[in-house]
Image (tube, rainbow, N blue to C red; front, side, top):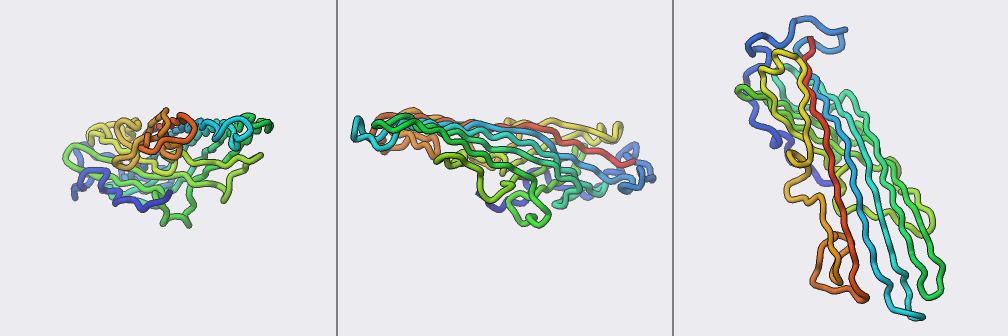
Length: 267
């Protein structure tokens, strides 16, 4: 599941040496707010929520007394939310050390084996909790990071993050196994926004929304798919050239998320 991210700065425009505080109508007074951070610092909060579903159905293998595997129906649901906060100097730059990590989620699944050749039906359930990565996990796929780039009249902000399993193994009843969705969006959180420098200069606090349509997972990743045929691959929800032995299988998945990126100037 884990892969090394490309340089996060690729999410945003090239940085310029111009300092944010040099914009017309300086953004911050040279005081501190409760001594928390120096005046002029940029506090960036990357937060959001998401989820998805993954379902498939496979027909039995064989028929009558020769049936060995019952009809299988499997459904999984993902739900997650996160909030990562960073502090950068007025000149912007990159940070991979958030000052706040608040994130959680849960994966849950139900698998039903229908009666086959006289055997009783069986239903199994699985759950897997998610959490924010620890500082010790900073070498992981997308340990929360943010880049703020100042260019001309715009400020571009790109952020990445992930959720990881809270336990080594899911909790399952019966014979169930927690199967991963073909796309684990909770492990590949990305968002990027552009805001006018003048807006931040006048208000000191600007929030922009992002959705999967405008920014999202790695290039080429499909967030939803489905198939219903004798060649349906339930691992990828894609039709293949190899037909199944006992009729059509059906499969679908759909993942999405949205959230906000807020930039605030400490005064």
